[in-house]
Length: 427
Picture (cartoon, rainbow, N blue to C red):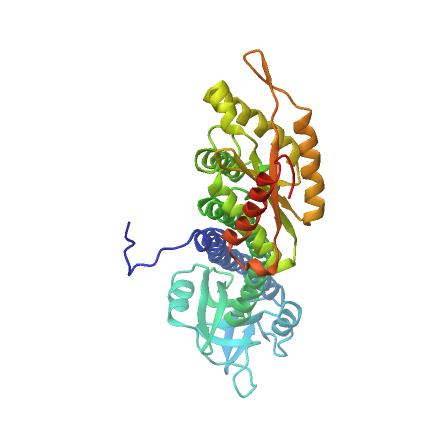
């Protein structure tokens, strides 16, 4: 099957990491935006309520500052017969205690104020904004704005009508805070929320990435294992931890093991004896050669042949020969245990691979196997059949290079020598 070029496939690794990161980042950004609006609304309402209370408090303070109505004479604000707050004590006291600017208007003109011009003098004599005049002086209503211009500076400001005893509106009371200060407080709160969201998001991303990386690592291990199986490595092993997982990845790992066994059974084993076949044997030998070249790990092979097997077939029939082969396969498997592998090389020939073992030690095990064969009777149709074998051995060395055939040829040569010199022996 041809793979189309041009569009690059997106790997599951990047997909899982995107799944772990993108939602967390998007949720963090969304939460920050929503929180910013909430904080701004909350701070605006809190500022409005504070200014409302402070404006009415200033109004009542002014009412108690003297008797009589407000008037202006010679540009000076009077309350009754006395000048009103000529020392600006009421206005300045509010500013020093609360940090809020305060102003007393007569008409639309500032008479007593804590607001300063650029040159440091008080902004007395300056006028209120037109929208304030319309709402407060003409409409008689309280007025709040988030960005009213006061002396060309944006303010959060609250205005209430200033009335004489006959309820006529003669001016206004103003309290306000520069918008820049309120926004600064809002930004400080948003920064705190950002740091909180960022901390939670970082923890969430770390946890998500660790889980995603764990899944990716597990999937890669399964992929490597399947790659070994696909290349015919019948001895490949999957991590025990993967197979013991209690999730879908664990199930995948266990199904993969079942798949390997099924594939090995189909193409890697001999159908009659259940032993590894010649194809699997070649792969096992290749692996052992690689370990020797990399780590100098020794191994020895032995080619074994059943003595006079043709006579067994001729005398008792091929069904008897099959029984002999199957029972010997069981005996060989028990003998090898953890020593290595036994392969049905062909017909009545078997290849024994003794891993991590020099030839002298392998020969001692082969002699033990011969003793077991001598004491074993194979039953067939009420008959007891004795079987012996001849073995030719070869220990792998550098002289063989990567050529399995040379190694097998030496073992075969020793086997034939034993056949020609009496059989039932280890050469």
